[in-house]
Image 1 (cartoon, one colour):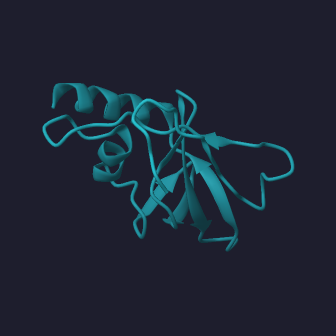
Image 2 (cartoon, one colour):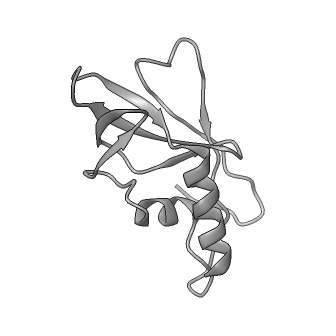
Length: 109
């Protein structure tokens, strides 16, 4: 695939059997950055523990993370996760307070 610098990239369609029919989410491409620029928001969130193969407790449940964070729009960040008690795979929103903390850490870097 050839990417031209002046042409906008088409958004990637996120797929999840739980949401396909009701919520057509689109992943917005993150801004291009050079080697000396700060990490992306997703990389910062991953460093906070929300990375693939990690285990987290959110909303009173324990999840095994199956994906890295994905930004949806400007304010929503999700991960695909396996809820341990039920065994269901679901898309889980990373709490806004965590996303805000990552934005602050990213600006400070």
